[in-house]
Each structure stands twice: as C-alpha cells, then as structure tokens.
Length: 183
Image (cartoon, rainbow, N blue to C red; front, side, top):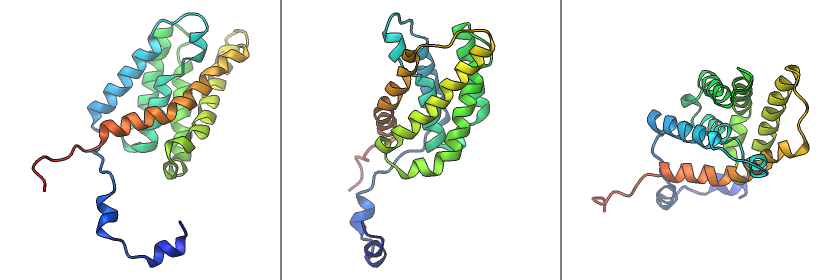
C-alpha cells in the first residue's frame, strides 16, 4: 500500500477486529518446543536422509529469538548446544558456539526479520544456517577432521524450506482461541 494512503485513511474498527491476537508464549511452551526439537535432532537416521535433515533446534532457537527475544538468550542456546554435543559425542562446545552465533545473528537481524512474513524470512534464515554450518565445520577442521562434501550443506536448504511451516505452526499454537462466552 501507498504510505500516503495509509496516513490519510482513518483506522476503522474492522481493521483492528480483523487482526489475529496471539497469546504470549509461556516459558513452559518455549522449553517444550526446544526439547521436542532436540529430540528431533537426536533421531537416528541413516543414509541420504541424514544429509537433508535440518537442524530443528537451530530453527527453534532462531524462531524464538526473532519473535520473542526476551524469552531466548545466549545462555540457553549455549546450554542446548552443549546438550547437542554430548548427544552427538562430538567436540564439546562445537554446537554451543554455533547456536550462540545463531542467537547473535538473529538478534542483529531481528528487527528486519520481524518486518517480513516467514516466506520472505527463509532466505535470510538460510544465510544464518549457513554461517552456523561454517562454524561447525571450522571447529571440526581445527580438530583434524576432514572437510565435508557438498551434501553436508543440503540441510541448510531443507531448513530454509521448513522455516515457513515451522513458523506458521508455532504461530497457530499461540493463536488465541475464540471465547465461547463472547458476543
């Protein structure tokens, strides 16, 4: 819409009624979603499906930090990263550092990301996931690991593709239920 049109039009009652109302996310809901995504990351997969599995925990951390930055912080991301490292029996602190970078980048880009709908946020989330993967690779290479193949980066594409459905699902769960006693 034209900004001049918006400025000149009086806001109507229907405009406010048509907007969705969301319930604030409780700490328990945020914690439950992080636990569910941690379990999804720990699912034992084999073969090619392992390459396309996105990092669900990184997506959840990014979602909560973009939409409810007061509920998510570096310490939570670092702790969840340590749990990932222990669960994967990898280098301790590898995912913790990567998830902390995800939180940092979503805090930097948070205002801009909140302006867009989830479909337009997806390419920017892909960039954040790419940075996270580079951190994980860098830490692994510093620990004398080999560089991964190009297939390692397929999880970024699936993560970006799943960003919109995950965002819509979490928003749907937070949507206020209609009051049966209301007129």
